[in-house]
Length: 384
Image (cartoon, rainbow, N blue to C red; front, side, top):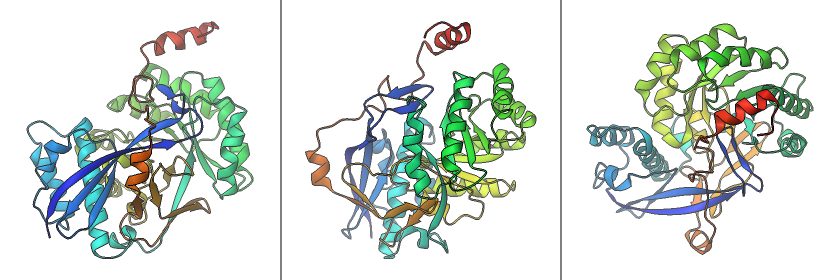
């Protein structure tokens, strides 16, 4: 069996509301979802998801290879870009191809990926995460009540610019989830909005008023000393790692005991998550994947012993993707469909004329140039 080629599609996810974080918001709630279809001479196609800007560059490592050698092919892709480096969009490309390879491997075994990876249970504990930064406070109840109805006991709230507002919103979400538990797990994500000189002071103000399970990305992803400072001063754990593009980037954080919950971005693929999990396990730390459309890394979450919770960002699927999962009982219930359990309706995707705005300057991955000015105005009482 050999890999013969690939095709790409782009569908969209309709959130039905503005989505984003402190770095920006997609106002119309429509975001693009890139899809990679990896083809074989056996007529079986693997599905991978995620932004992948270097497909032509990386595919040379896979062309003509046996797709069942997934971990060897992962290393082959890394080796193929050794000189140019594997950060950024290149790492995203490797992750998308890696998902497609694992999808193929499980399909060829005629079993769901969670079984191929050795999991005993199809249930994956999870927490709700609505990317709700742009919503008014009173809309949080409407957003998180359906999650509470599905048994969720934990949720993440975005913040960073206005600590008093963040405390109020955390309390609102906590009260919604109290229908299921007296002590909901609250995660507070500031998406790298603070400097080291601010992080401990701001985080303490929040923690003094709301019990937190973790605070996420309090400083820039590479700021080991900043993460360590926060970790040493708070009761809550520090969670970080979703934006680290490579296993080697975790070492400085782990060596300084600067992270309590080790995260990995789902968009970086299955193999990356598995390796991050082993790295965390060696330090007796839990691991938690950051969410993405269709929750593809949930299959791997089910198979690692130190999995804590998986982030789930929405209760619906992108246009043209049918996903064999149920979101209930406070987590993800994986199905029996072979592979990742994702079926792609190419005709429906081709007929759709919407385009997403996740990666444009107004999207949540681009820090506004006036973010510092707006923060200063908030502190002085001016209108932003």
